[in-house]
Length: 431
Ligand SMILES: [Zn+2]
Image 1: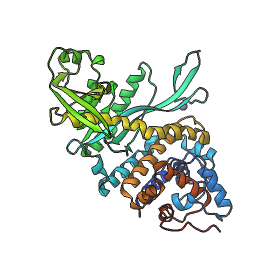
Image 2: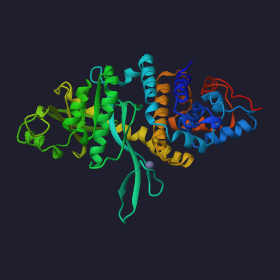
Image 3: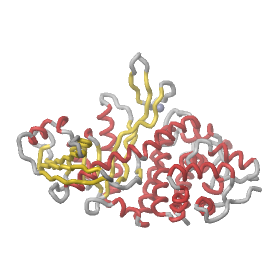
């Protein structure tokens, strides 16, 4: 069994065990069919896949569709039924499924590409809004006032993502949803969610020796300590301007420094680094001592093109500072990768299923991240998937081919579909 089939069959098992609110004879569609139908929309990814597959099953597919052959769905439920049945399901039910893609990578050697800083992996935290509307809302929406007195509704989550510098693939891990809490501002809510994530999942990922990445709002003692409590390390953006104690220590001392000339294409850049070890993160006797580092990049004209600073509990010196700065910068990858997908595709999805009243929005965001994790695992460990992608030339073109070809032809298996996309076998003959 290939990577894709294995991961989907693990998902089917989970979906079969989802809580079912129906009683008596109304339970026509199995929960497994309902969960997998929603997932297929993200995995193909296509907001029209279910409509196409219903059409195929009723027409020349003679009862068969790709929902059945590729996802093991016996009968395709309606969009309304999917919404009603998934709305009460807590998204946590899907969290164990984020483990198999990481295991697949570990076993298939795909994780070596993520190993940095002498055997560590990087897990980046980031707060992301995955739903925003001026109209449609639910009791779990966060709200904010817009100019003109209108209210905007939104949902956000803290994502945890395996990233690596110089590597354009990322692996989403379990999300943690940010729930509005009275008496806390937006930043509090995000950092509290990150601490819940660490408590829930940190021990599980400790075996990978993670270094957690985050922006300046994570560079606070309670989060640094929460990371260390689960045997992790931190490498957080830390602006001296928002850390006055640290700022004081950095002022008026001659900092250790390192300079390097680097060529990107035809352009020359000057990289300079500075650092200082054992600096208190905040005021007071119980302050955590951290190591601070800074990177500055100038182009040939002497103009600063990038500048950032970080704190970490890893040793900073001439031998490590370059790699640490590169890893700290890797955090920005996730904004370009998983969340563009989550935002654009996620917004699409609201059109299919509506907004729900309880968990729907969170369940769909979770399935979207899960599909993304499955894609990366397949891409890094599944030869045929990779050949099909190479044949398409680019990632987006691979997915548009997948979307188009499955709308018209029923493939007996993933093997057959991927062989067709890799041009190693002819497509099935339409009846
Ligand atoms: Zn809502």
